[in-house]
Length: 193
Image 1 (spheres, rainbow, N blue to C red):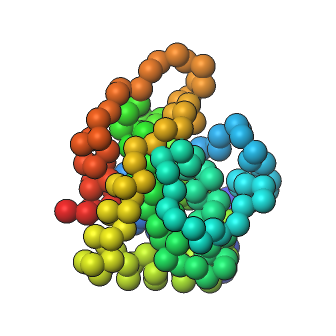
Image 2: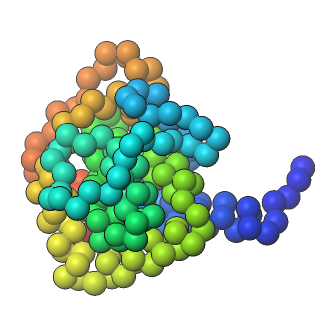
């Protein structure tokens, strides 16, 4: 067995550590990405064709988590960290909410893998800069409250939750959720309260 050393080991360990911290240690397990939509699989993970960092108002509930994570990466690359932090919070809240709606172990693991795959698309320096901005935002009560409110205002997700299922055509419906349950999911994921 070959032991990783140097930059690859540092990047692998820092990505895992960052993923654990960002998802609240719910899951560090990674699995295969969703093959639906305009995503392509390459040697480093998911890419969303033609995604750029937008500067307009926050998303509605129709944005899929993989799209949000792809734009988050573009915002990190453009050093628009405030937007990237919002997209991280929104995408993670959506996957956390969806995983709880389905309630399976696979769905809980799928929650963590999305962020890990997105971060693997960034350089070590970009991940480090982004993590510093997330930490600074989440440690500032005013900024954290603003992020929590923006995510809640974006609303419950309206996208299909099939990406959280082992068998995409299983026909098992997700547990319906109310607005109050969305607010609780955001509070739990982002530690808003």
